[in-house]
Length: 185
Ligand code: IMP
Ligand code: MG
Image (cartoon, rainbow, N blue to C red; front, side, top):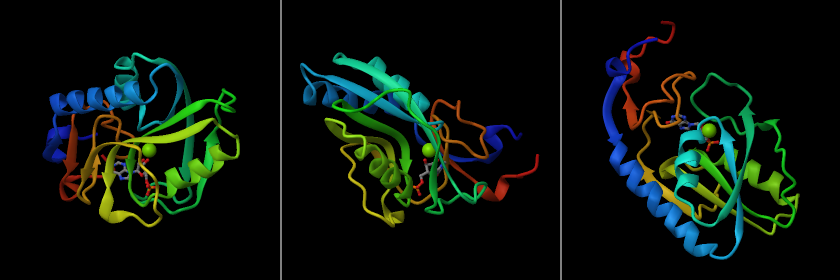
């Protein structure tokens, strides 16, 4: 695995900006759900650091759960649209205020599929909280209720986002220089 500095084109969102924005999103959620309970659902694995930082800033009552999905044709850096659930929730979400937490929306297929799936389970409410939005890449429209940052169409890593499963631990969101990336190292 290459040192991240060899493949980092630029830091797009630094640690402080992430911290500040995540706190703002949590404040918004605290206001919107004042006096109520929420269930945060993390879409593994990319949304992990984001959800952890988000929940640490919540003052309303909350619980968490996780689920995982994958698209066929994995290894590619684009979603195929064939999304399936690989790990289901432990919680019954019926009559609960659910907030789906995701790292990034690209084509929109992942979120759109997950939303359809969760709606059939009759939550009291269902909202979407996303850290990054590659607006120009959208193929299916998805409602985003809480958004961290709109970004350009560049491949990013860090703060949960991976490059072939590595670099999720970086404390910032960086742009990958794919020309300098040696996939098999
Ligand atoms: P969508 O289904 O096309 O919206 O893709 C969303 C998923 O693609 C995210 O959950 C990420 O796992 C992945 N993804 C999209 N863009 C990036 C990126 O720039 N870096 C890392 N993962 C990405
Ligand atoms: Mg993801």
